[in-house]
Length: 140
Image (cartoon, rainbow, N blue to C red; front, side, top):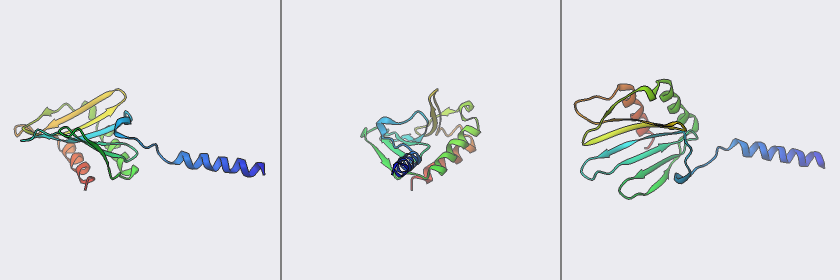
């Protein structure tokens, strides 16, 4: 009987450890990818936040509302983190917004780094635009 109890406790611990922690918009971890767009006539900023576990949130600067969107597969989400970290994202300095602008950022415990583009006079680096397009495609 004792072996059965020990086995059940072990299986419970193993099973509960496999599920990644779930967050709310108010309790986000430090490690995030943020992306979105802003400006235009309304001046609204839509910010999407992707976590490594695949959770995805959206926040509107006008309504001040945040909601969780359909989660991404965690492996796919981790690929985005790996891509940004692999290109030394924090070393890319590019801030050229236009009336309508786009942004891609990486948050860690050490801080946040953001790239902003939209000015017709300055083209964002292609790898940044490519990752942004891939992230936007995950929203559909």
